[in-house]
Length: 325
Ligand code: PEP
Ligand code: MG
Image 1 (cartoon, protein in one colour):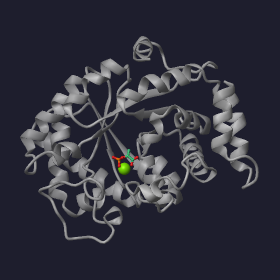
Image 2 (cartoon, rainbow, N blue to C red):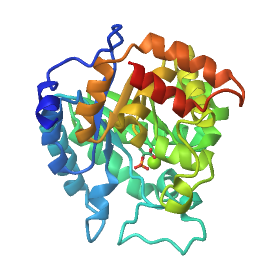
Image 3 (tube, rainbow, N blue to C red):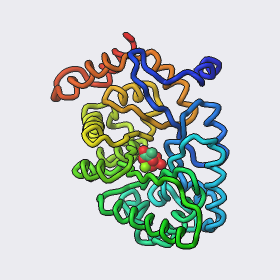
Image 4 (cartoon, rainbow, N blue to C red):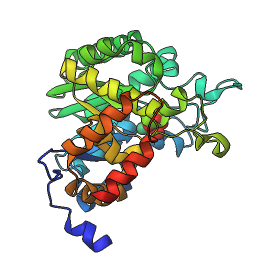
């Protein structure tokens, strides 16, 4: 199997009926980067910058962050890297940074909430990223956005850092693309604002599923209770795809769903054309893609989503489709 997947490395990810799907990989450490070449991923769709903080014993300084991001960009050898601004708190514990005890850390002071309250930390990270990506394109997305205003504030902070750096004569990125991670359901009622204001949107399906179903992603007792391939969640994803299409906004998804052939197939079925996953998943997902008729799949899947609560469970429909094809 491994050999088979390796042989697919240079094969373009196109379905049988000619639908191109961008396959990127998730990463968080420098040791992940050689996987870009190994896996044949077209870029890093999610670079979890907090990992570097989680393994440090103190807050990484400006120089350290800057050197680190520069190495990441260099090792990507021209392939695009989408950095995610610090996502700490909840399940992502940074040893030297502890807030007060929280009853519900997943719903607590984390990610953007923390970054906007402690802007010094965010500012150092923004400055490091801007400097590291001098003369290149910088792609940066913000996690756990709950109100579009938070993204507007983040954009203002980026602009301020850009001004600061240019005032001191530093080279700047040739382009800065700012994205929203869609992982809090409140954004479902701000979809058009999100799609028009963000340069790109990336669905964090792990958190979006956890919050949509009110089901802790780390609690085995409940995490398997609800099905990401059920009608409910696929309808959520379909609405996101439609909003992105309406606004011509680049859309991707970087949660675990992207990395299993059956769930990845469902994502293509609801209309995703770009997904990002663990490097080891690229081969299996690509081999599924090459065998897929995306148009037939959508024609089978989309009516079933509208089909109320009657009819066959959507997961079974997808399994049947996968077996027949
Ligand atoms: C997600 O929530 O789906 C995601 C990609 O981010 P993380 O798993 O790091 O929270
Ligand atoms: Mg997340």
